[in-house]
Image 1 (cartoon, one colour):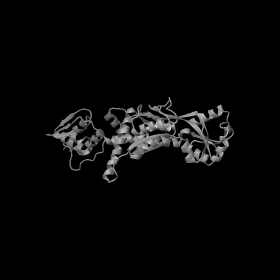
Image 2: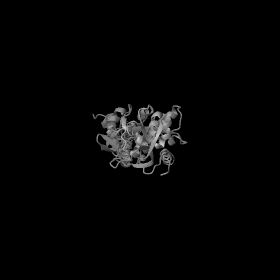
Image 3: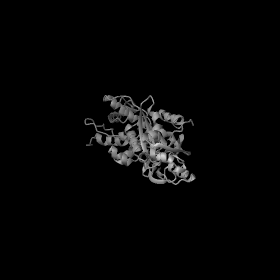
Image 4: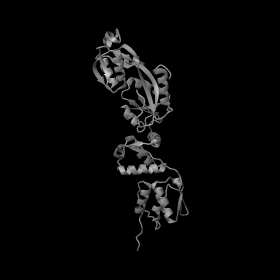
Length: 387
């Protein structure tokens, strides 16, 4: 006597084809014609297909219970199961892609999702097959999104943000989603310049959710798309050797002013700039653009400062300057801010040193309302002229 087939083996085959979790129905087994199911499932998503008889009825039941195909796409009429050629998106696949893009590797994403790396790899391949586009490229041990991948990541951010908003609304939390602005800030950029550049975005009528990532410029550029950055603020344009396709938008330029504690400033203000020869100085470290500009200026004016401290963090440098340890430099564009916040006095200005500041974006034409507000205010107000 032939053994009646059970649901489990065929549903496992369906699982392989559809890449979803499957729980066999406890009260229903597929009919004898169910061996046709695996063959039929392999055709899903490729073209409109039909299956007649009991196998069609079993398949319609399986697909509806699995949620593998949207309900409107399943038509069961007179034991005929018709799968319409509908475009649909598996949001589990999209979530795995979003997490891998955010974390930069499948291994890191697998630890957060509590899934094996091969499982995630299979889900992403299924998403690529659905979209008909390659989403990742290999870069060493990391995965870098393609141009299509960057586009999908931006939409995924919006989709999952809307999902969080929905759950908040259903739980009675305040509704209304602020406009999100994700900014990368070069660690060499003075903190006051960064604040003054971003300030106009926070003054917009529409609420803004500002997210800031501070890092070395090279790492920010490498992760420009991975982090979903709307722009990077930097004191240098995008280098010619950068692997990411992006555009440098000049925000403005500023001269340099020298500051010190009032008593120290009074000492070196007379006969400036020759008075700075031998003066105690607090300088940025060697690989920062401002340090190179200062060294050239010192050389041109035959000044040999007595370096008492070198700093990567401009905010920490100013703390030492406020304490009276030495003279330090900052952009003239924020001269008044520096004097008030650090309680220091002006020693003099070096207008021949010009520092430029850039907004770097993957877009040639800036469209984000907050980014547009930042660039317009920088060009017309902060740096004193329209470019």
